[in-house]
Image (cartoon, helix red, strand yellow):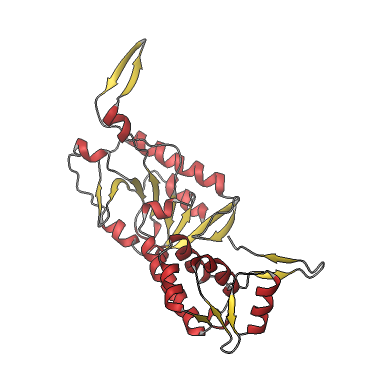
Amino acid sequence: MNLKEVINILEDKGNSKELYFCEKNKDIYESVCPEVSEEIFEILIQNAIDSICKKSEDEWIQYNPTGFREGTLEICNIDYVGNYNEVINSFSSENIEIEKEKIEKFSFYCISIGEGNKNVKIFRRLTKFRKISTHGFLGVFMGNQLNKIDSQILGIDGDIDLIVYNNEIVILNHISLERIFKIEEQYEKKSKETMDRLRSTGKIENFDAFEEDCMNNLLTRKILTRMQSEDNDLSKCFDNFENIVTTIDMFELPLNVNTNNKSIIYESKDQIRDILLLARDSYYRSLIQEKPGIDNKV
C-alpha cells in the first residue's frame, strides 16, 4: 500500500465522503449513514492523516495473529479477513432517523472517501458509555453549573484502527482486526488446513485427539494459522526423525516416541506447544557457542 497515495486521497476536499456507524452482531452487520457536517469530516480525516504519519516510518510486516511487535506496521489482504465484503455490503447510504436505543450498540465507524480504485476506507472502534448511561449519567459544565446530558453519546477519539486501500488492509491497532471483522472464522479454516498437512506426515500418533485439542483452543488455532505463512514445508517437518529424537533428548521435552513407526506419541494437551515447536523447526543450537535455544516465533 502506498501511504502517500492514501494521504493524497484523504486531503482532496473534492472527494465524496460518507460516514457509517456499524453494529457487529453474532450473525449480521447493520449500518447507518447519518448526515455529517463538513467540520466533523475534517476532524476525522485529519485524525487519520496524523495517525498515518506517526506510523509511516515503521517496518512493514505481514499480519501475525499470534502477537504484535513494537515498531512495526502490519498489513494483510482483504481476502485474509474472509468476511470483508459482508461488512462493506452492510453499508447503506439510505438516510434514516437513528433510534436512541441503537446508538449504544454501534461497534465501530467507517469513513469512505473517494470512488473506484481511488477509494480509502478508515475504520475505528467506538468508545462505549453503556454502563454510565444505564446506571449513572453524563454531565457537562456550563459556567459553574453541572447539567445532565440526556442524549445518547458516541465516543470518538483521535485514533484510527485500520486503513483499506487497493484491496489491502493496514493495521494500526493489532487487536482491531479481530474486533471489527469475524476473523475467527478464518482461523478455523486456516488452522484446519495446517492440521491436514500435519496429519499427512503420519508422524503423530493419536492424531484425532491431538487435532481436537488443538482446534478447541483459540491461541493454538492462531498459531496454526500463522504456521501457513512461515518458510517451512509442513508436509516434511518430521522427515529427519533422528533429529527429532535428538532434540527431544537435548531439551528434555515431555514427549515419548515410537521408534518402530518413527512417530511422536500424543498423550496430553500440555504436549501441544512442544509438538508445534518441533513442527516449526523452532529448536536450535547456536553456531558460535553451540548453545541450545528456542525461537518462539511470535
